[in-house]
Picture 1: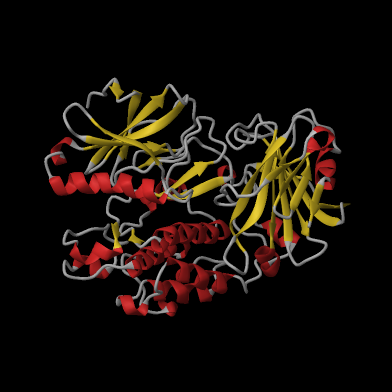
Picture 2 (picture 1 turned 60 degrees about the vertical axis):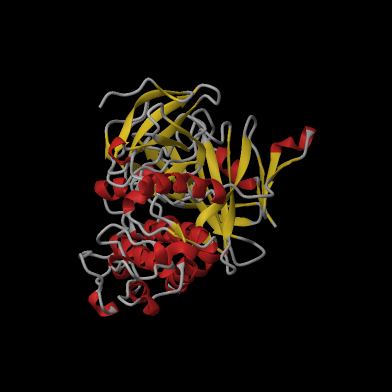
Amino acid sequence: MTAPQRIGPYAIERLLGVGSFATVWLGYDPVLDGYVAIKVLAENWSHDLRVRERFRDEARLLRRLEHERLVRVHAVGELPDGRPYAVLAWANGGSLRDRLALAEIPVPAALRLLGEICAGVSVLHRHGVVHRDLTPGNILFHSTGAPSGAESTGAPSGAEPTGSPPGAEPTGNADGVESTGATSGAERVLIADLGLAKALAAASGLTARAGTPGYMAPEQDDPGAVIDTRADVYGLGRLGIRLLAAAPGPDPPRSAGALRLRDGVSARVAAVLVRATAHRPADRYPDAAALHAALDRAVDPVRQSSPVARRPYRMLLAGAAVAAVAVAGAEPGGTGAERDTYTAGPLTVTLPDGWSATGTTWAGQYDADGEAEPALVMSPQPRRWAVDPGVPGAFVGVSASTAARTTPAGFLAERTHGDCTSAPVRTTRQAAVEWTVVAYRCDRGRPQIVESAGLHPGRPALVYAQIAPPADSGPGFVDTLLAGVRLR
């Protein structure tokens, strides 16, 4: 396939992937100085009016919803031959299929990830949309520190990768989406490829088979069936089984006892996944939000205070959260002499000289009302520290739900760094918080990572700080930074 030199105003760098319905190219936007993914309808489908309309519907839907948990569309257009294309922001963290191809995701991260996926699908359900094709290839990751300014990209199901992004170390590719090897937990989980999604009001009129075997609800095989949010609940349940089962099989289990989960997963979770994948839609949870709530109830009583399997280094940095998204209302702290502080929700931090901060939510951590819990990232370059090992920084978050299930020491035991050597655990009392601190020296990536956690002095919540100190910082840098963390 010969690469076009340009598509609209975008210079084409290379092919990202080819799927059954579309081709995805990596383009460069000279105005915004960033990369985009350009999804072009395949030539062999360009004369099928139904497929053309579905292709356009995806772009319209993404534009209408415009949510940080969904891939975002920048523009649409047509090639000289009449084929439509959509310009999407480019995901730099690859897909879930990529990561599962490399290794199993450790249980604590897999549980958090499943919750994030449910939260993303809940956005669709709140707007009366059914996705219909929830698979590992359609779950994408985007680091919030991406230097290109891109947000994310969807790509056609079945797309085959053709290479790595410029200047990046690939960590696995799928669906035309490539990974930069970003080592940040400050990354968003995004729901991609809505080409099969359809508004609930018209769902019963869709007669084409839509979905991927293994993740597709049984009723999707029936052209006359009414497809609703419970079809996505089935897909989410199958994703949960793929993430958490010891030996995922081709068919859903019919009882909790028949589902053998990985070590560290509560039997309560098995019951939730079995209900989610029930054959009859009426026996499932009504939507993604209800499934998410049931998972939270199943996981929260379990106190995971013992060490677990070591998590890959690339999935840990910036708080070890599976995703983090911008939080409304975060404010820098004043002007003049007060500019060295930053406030996000109940958190206020004193910034080291030359550092700034940005507010986020601690994705994967939810309060009793189902809202993501607060966090922030601070660094000399907050948008770059996640992807550039040479940029120091810190992630700080507060979580009541985490305090309800584990201790600070137990929480840190979940966050070991397999490629690094740890120093002895120490404690330090800073700003009314008794911090447990573990420092890691690493041979690759960042030379030092410091994990620290303590309890909020005024309410039942755990405060967590992950720090990548500057290379020239002294031994007191970590304690000084922790002393600057103040909680309301």
